[in-house]
Amino acid sequence: MNSYLKELADICGIQKNLSMHVARHTFATSVTLTNGVPLETVSKMLGHSSLKTTQIYARIVDTKISIDMNQLQQKLNVESCGVAV
Image 1 (cartoon, rainbow, N blue to C red):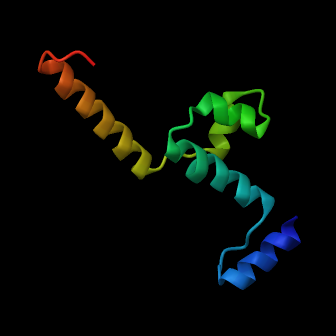
Image 2 (spheres, rainbow, N blue to C red):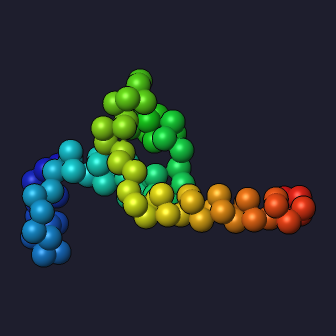
């Protein structure tokens, strides 16, 4: 699998040394968490029995924090106006 990833990296001009380890980090962070998949679900997808293990692979990036804060702000703005969601 790693040799295929390295070949794809060469074809795509990616300078980073791709491996299954890097792919798991990318999947956990960029594909799932950034797109709103809960950490508990990501944990099951990766086959982890502990959320602590998943937290090693799934890093919370600034983009995700920004998206979550914007959603919270919208929710608080709607609720403060007396509009039920």
